[in-house]
View 1 (cartoon, rainbow, N blue to C red):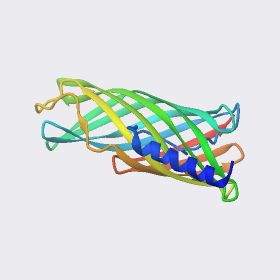
View 2 (tube, helix red, strand yellow):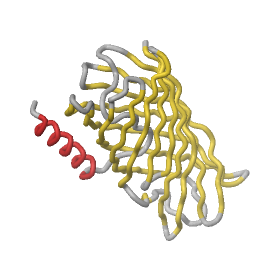
View 3 (cartoon, rainbow, N blue to C red):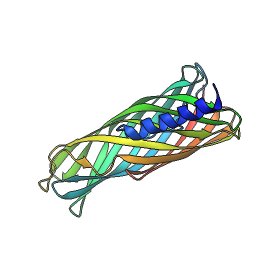
Length: 234
């Protein structure tokens, strides 16, 4: 493939990411980094904050997710990833803060490398993912409600691989978050409208040892979130 075609493919995937509705949640490197037929597993911690609106109220949902992360390479260019574990959400609305309790969360997705500039060692890629989480929120000592979150999306970006042990990346995401919170007080509707769908993400993968890596990520604009994870190659 010529360099022109590679650059064009990279631009197309970034345009796809801007043109669709996507999800929040951990993303990771937007290109496939998993070796063919190999698993990478490890713990992941994600903290996030996202704004919504309902019946004139500004609502901020924040919390953390404690996940077990896995990545699997189908071939050199295509891979699957997932997270499963515990998720907790706190909600602020009308000057009040309602504390959440840990529930279950799961995220599944796929990503692909679409183009590569071998001379500059730059890869372009993107993918899709779906996150589902459910926990409970204490509105008062005697009132509790269930909080359901579902996030669907696409993402696209580039990774820079000129150094074998250090891989920075960045990209664009669009998020479509659907919510349902039972028994919410203040006359707020159970379904919230998210405050924004377009965001950016950037991160760094650091190879600590031959089979051990450290990942760090920031997601901004439509959410303010950070992720850190360890990966053990099996």
